[in-house]
Image (tube, rainbow, N blue to C red; front, top):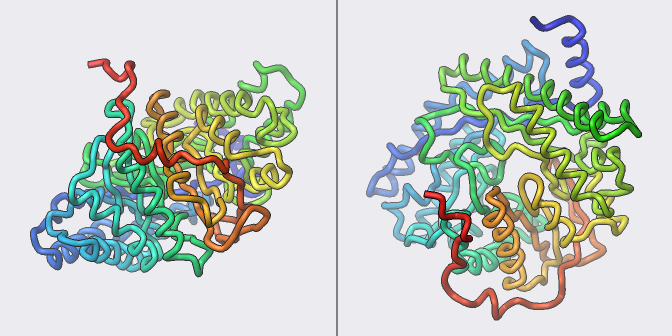
Length: 453
């Protein structure tokens, strides 16, 4: 039985502490849309999305109105498009699929659609490579499509041919959208150990292990955690950890409520609640601010990685008790442009690309929404991707790179993306090269602890 005091407390979280449900993501399988004719394939995709997702936005608004819980995004994820590509003979065919996804997303009213994806952890098929090479054009001519490429896993190692190609694709995407501060790259992520049930973009796709349709929910609440910690400032670690766990439980329970209601009203199975603390550019909704409240002067100061590890672990321990099923990424996000506290840390000189890489060892998900100079070499971008994929592979966790080489800008400049993407200072990149490493062909083998069968 929920007490009146708990109702009042939740209302306070929503009104004053930026508590929200970050996304309801409807996963839709498109495997039954496959056709050998590209026109028929696109028509099947469009019809499937319009049929299954027709009520998603209206149901989300109903739940918001009835419960007073903000639901920031209503999103769709679909089967990785490369798996549908039997009819695709060229990059233009895949661009046509991206346009179909974009049009269908606009028609049903969702913010974003994810799944323009290739799964290339152990090698690229012909259709994988065609999709990957189509990404720059696809993201330059669509508004709502997000793309992801999986290039490694703990079980398979890292496909360095795909990593090398992605360095080139990211630069090409930046160039294709240079008139928008290379914003196409904000919709493109490279992944290791990608989960099948992730509701968060840009890495969301509907995995082949999932049901025909499923509802996944991502919660958020950095501001709630920050406010709770202000009340125990200076207390010992036991009290600190208990406070985070208790708060994560309350935040996640809101997500479970919304997930259950959306599942019932849409007549679609409930999948998972993702426990991730996802920040926004709004003041007071920052993971970096939580780290400062824990005790570091700015994110990036000595002690930051330990504080982040503590936060990530306690969020999971508290949240897992409040949801029937937990999945996705489930941790603390540290995107630079989407977190005003992270932006401030970069501007103060406290946070470097190398420190961010260290922090990704203990949180979700990786190097996220980081703006770098537009003249950064492709091989350097591939090297950054390889480093982050290695962290995921060895540590048996999901890691990702969403990096934006902003054409025409350098260190000292700032780039504005707007909305939830926020703004970011251009971060410096190590000037020394790695071309001889990146240009080796083949695959980095899986680590020894991958052999568990």
